[in-house]
Length: 120
Image (cartoon, rainbow, N blue to C red; front, top):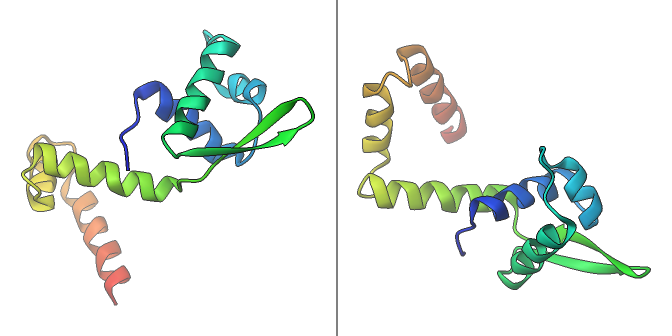
């Protein structure tokens, strides 16, 4: 699965939320300053070429919808992060966040409980 640019990810976040929509509705969900219609339309076509989005005709326009699930992309992105910055070790990644004080002991305990719950 290909990595997305920041702009592509922003459009995908909207598509994952709205499920099926047109370019005008995508733009309405984006923060100010709103990008131009042609810009969003171009990004959506790039996402289509990358295999993330498909469409169906609606009158003279198109309704776009994601064909890659958000969780699938998230999993792949996390794995890429771990591989590129933590030599493939999730332990190293967690250790990094604990050492940087971004994760306290209560958070870590909560994560471990969730993991244990999912493994039983």
